[in-house]
Image 1 (cartoon, one colour):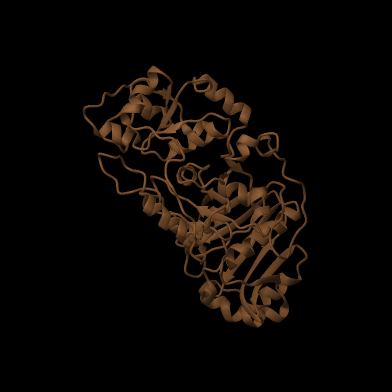
Image 2 (cartoon, rainbow, N blue to C red):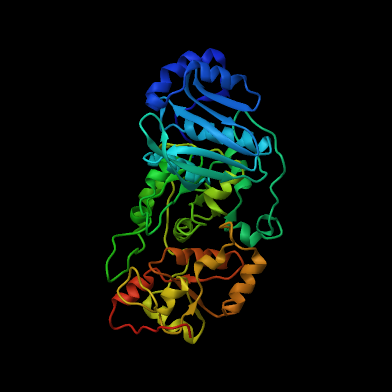
Length: 458
């Protein structure tokens, strides 16, 4: 996949840039803008790092950081005529790289409480909100959200460059000794190497959740370079209905059109990611594998791992030439409602929802509470560790062995609507266990009054 996005070079901010900075300051920051004297003082301080984004001789953005144990982002600004081109994300990545190189333990910043776009960009890098400073921005008295990014040693990003402080320790998951897992997952470091190589590559951003189904605004604020946004509800599902569940599989024609729009060609490797440990990205992994794309992998740890590994982020849309891939169906096994009902008699039926939904204690979305009789509770979240990365292969093997899936004749997985169940299918595949997906899942089953429902944890 080839990208055609606006680009700019990064270099240190110079005193000669200050007239252009002074022209932009009031446009970007209004009454809170800094004076030239403040910038001259800042540029003279040894613990400051300021970068400029320039196109030709034209300054289009600037950003700065105060280095220390807790580094503090002083400013990030982009000319309004040059926004949505990745400049803010690239400059922020450069500042984070400088902080890592200086040995900082965290990066702090303040952002206007009303600036949802900037907050989404920072969240995509792994920043977390700590609280609100009331009346921080003067003279208007606007509130600021204080955000923090915890750092760990990793590869520094950005074209200005900072050296590697310590290599990121590779896990068992990403060694040559684990080929099954490598067919399903890719590390942030491996993805960075692919992006920097000449290998054709399609990267898909599949951010989605029940609470925030439209992930496009987060994508626009910041994404892996070259990534295409995937709308799960429209690209990876057909219209919801009680007969088929909340996220029925899309038609092959719909998926074909989406794949072409993403710039996917036959033979191209694909990497999918999200910001929730692969919970929604796994749906794209499963569907593309189902449609005959052989090399599809999930970014282990998602955007959090990408940012912590020093990955650059870009904002805005990425334009690509239409792809020429030809998809075909049925390359991954599926089960319908009758087959799911029959599975416990000869194999294992895994319910990938949270345990309280399996037990029938709560049901926030679907018509009835409970689970398919004979199903075993196997929450998808238990596939992940505290860093939202897939557990080691040994841990996953022990988990699925305890659930009876290791040696079962048949394994079928369902969830609420067939989305997070794909994550469980991926985790099973990573340790060599083939499983069928029940796409209609609980949303289809519970809407059919003729289907029995079980409750409790037995």
